[in-house]
View 1 (cartoon, helix red, strand yellow):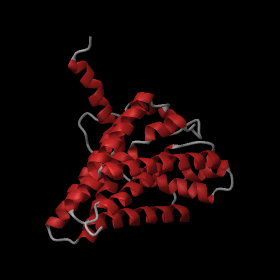
View 2: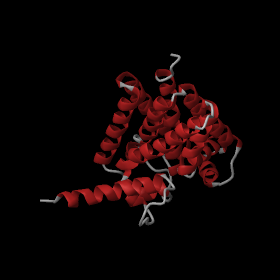
View 3: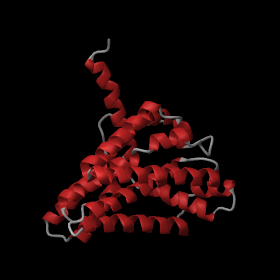
View 4: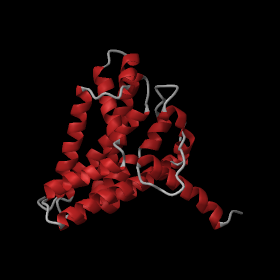
Length: 261
């Protein structure tokens, strides 16, 4: 029979992997992460989202405290979340938009998605994502609800990723998504449970239900589009899915947490 410390050590190791992969936070004893580490620890991605959302909320509150109005404060909070993640998911969104929009066939789309240069489709996708997220945060305005919205959005946005990796085949034989392999069914279930809990706490039961339905719909649409466009998913597609999810949850939050509604 395992002791409590024997159970706790792998849990803490997975949490560390989730935070190291999702952020640029300088954790002690940081080591290189390979694909197998990510697949095993994928259940912890919503926890990393809570950390990212919490940092964004802290920046937002600090900016209001020094006298900035909600618009600039929202922009700086969004900039903080982007910086702390190293533009990980924004890069995936831009590459996916450029590849799907600019490539003529599967091979060309995959080549474009690996090109570090930003194209018109990617720039427009990034602009749309940033504007929608900024406007949602600014519309909520009050620091308490903004905190709930940011933490719920970042946690729930990452909750579908393990299931997506399990159910959608990889488009390449190499790359992050291919090397990660398939997360376990348990990891996928835990991630969904954490995302649902974050939505319920942050937005309430009714909005959480709507949010979960939208997350499932977004995953289904992006899965269909990815298989049709490039034959499956890549790390860039996972990043694009996170961005779409984050936008959807923040828009729901803007409806239910906006003091004017």
